Image 1: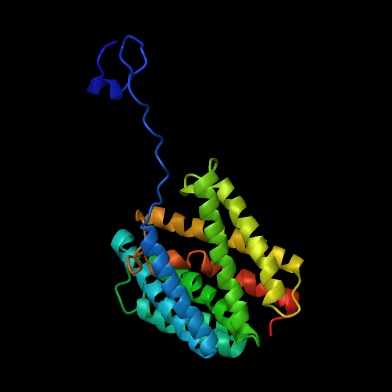
Image 2: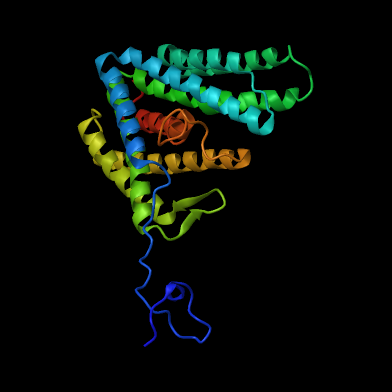
Amino acid sequence: MSSVNESTWGPAPATGQAPVGPPTPPQKKRAGRDLRAAVGVGVGLGGTALAVLFVYRPAFLVVIAAAVVVGLWELSTRLVERKQIRVPLPPLAVGGVATVVAGYLQGADGAWTAMALTVLATLLWRMFSAPEDYLRDVTAGVFAAFYVPFLASFVALLLAADDGHRRVLVFILLTVVSDTGAYAVGWRFGRRKLAPRISPGKTVEGLAGAVFFAALAGALSMLWLIDGGTWWQGVLLGLGVAVSATLGDLGESMIKRDLGIKDMGSLLPGHGGIMDRLDSLLPTAPVVWLLLAVFVGAD
């Protein structure tokens, strides 16, 4: 028997003999982020938000408004850096806060009105700069107004109900459970890619995990947290959340691929930016608001 040397740890020799020595152990799957930082930041943010929500419910508007302003800043900054698209941030930020507050105080009609005024202010604000690329910039501004503050206003609509603190809790809980279920099942069992051109890490098995765990959490939440709710309504609610959260995640992945970036920001260690955490929450808010309004009423 020949002695083992360094070459035996590489590919098989040309003679066709199998390499000598212990086989290379299979590589474990690794998460793409600092898991400790991600969990710590997530728990800290979630705990603070829930404390505000249950201690003094109207103060949660500040949490929503702050997320909207920071999210708009991140989005506008990346658009300038990567595409030279200059979104009019001041009217968007002021109008975004107004949209959230109007949704809480005046309902859906108030949110729609504030949204329309925000778009108008965006068009007018951009008129004071050079006319070149006006259409491109205001189009991006209208998109930003719809994507961040308008979708966030549905959280304010949830909050405004008599049991608003519980509705917002259900909304956050189901979105987190959906994301966590998708990550855990996809990381352990994922084989078939869900949308490889948009987000290579997402799998069909991960989506199945999101649906299962969100449906289970939805059934329990409707029974325990929502007056008049039934388990089957919770299953449908969980299914809607799993689909909308996944589409929201894919939608932002598409934006980031177009911009050529990994994260929308770096404000949150282990997570990226605020927009990287809002990607599944924003499109899920109107779904939860609508289904709860159909099942148990909007008030």
